Length: 256
Image 1 (cartoon, one colour):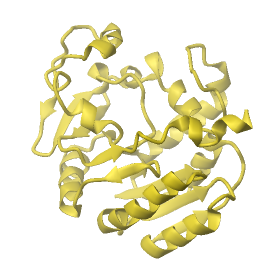
Image 2: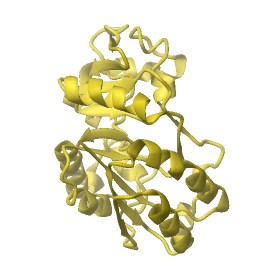
Image 3: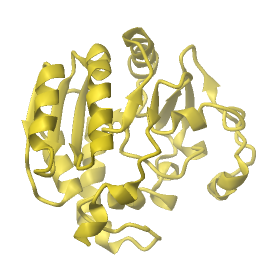
Image 4: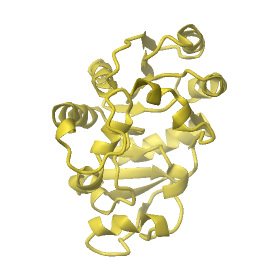
């Protein structure tokens, strides 16, 4: 049901070590999936390619150096034949077993046919006060998009929480999620056509990083625009972000 799509760089030793440590876990859980991977640099190219060859059985690996993250992602998605796609960063660490993941996929995708399954910051949004329809103090801006506060809260499944786009606790539609492939492609197409015209604040408007794409799908372009779509969040902390290596060290600033 799912293919993995990645377009990234890995130019510092700490992140390469994360990738090396995590790929065996990725293989154990997602080893049956097709991977469509573009490495968007030459630094550590041989090392990264070797790691993917070693651990990922169904690998389609590219070294397209065009500095247009969204256009490259769309070209990868155009190769996908499964109904769902997942984009994951190289610094997102697996804490799950294959059974953990299969339980979530069965409930969210097979039984409930959700449009979007969050895998980024699930360890934040799968806890109170969000579960019951509340917001943390730093997230109160979100209630401006709701027609009631607190919201009705999540519908509780065995392995996942469910909510509509109308009452999303997060205002951005991150690419780091399992989502319907056709919808994912449509959003990349729209962004490539209209991204430069976007009026709301996007702190990082640079084509060669995913931040621009994610920033476009924020505010009124966020989940609330898709009020009737089905969103889900795993109840367990299955994947966590490696936060100690900050974005400023990734090298994107040197290209400005």
